Every structure is written in C-alpha cells, then in structure tokens.
Image 1 (cartoon, rainbow, N blue to C red):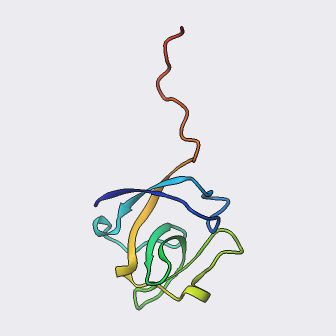
Image 2: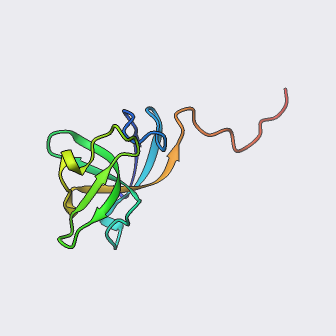
Length: 109
C-alpha cells in the first residue's frame, strides 16, 4: 500500500499527535532515502506491533534510534534501534480526531 491512514492510540507522541488523531503515512517502499532526523515514522516492533515515533538518530549501519515526543514515552533506550525493514512508512499529515472543518461551505437554510 502506498498511502495508509492510521489512528493514533496512546500519548507517546503528545503534544504533536494526540490519542484519537489520524495520520497519513507514505509507504517506506516508495521513499528513496532513509528517514531524516526529526521525521515521524511508522515502525513494526516484534512484540508491540505498530509504533509511531520520531527519528532521533541514524547510524552508519542503517539502523535508526527513535523516541516519542512525550518525555514519558518509550524510546530506543528501551525499545532498541530499528532496521530499515522495520520502517513501514513516514507520516506526513495529521488529521485531528475531531476532523477538519468543512472546506466547502454549505448553502444557508
């Protein structure tokens, strides 16, 4: 899948992403370069499933270190580093849990 909509569950990326928000993520298969430091990525963890984290560091071995924006969230210190094949996608748009206001006005009643 090239584009995926994911619902945020939890507070590890707060205040950037809130519980119940949605993100649009571009499949990492279509991205030519490794994720940049500071970008938000979608990862697959063997035990925890799908995670959304910010890239903190890239290593010469191709692995990345990640962390949440919330200081209380798990980071690579406890999760370990992630290999490129564990990167599912890269988030590029946040959709608030309450949605966007209507972009096209409605007719007055």
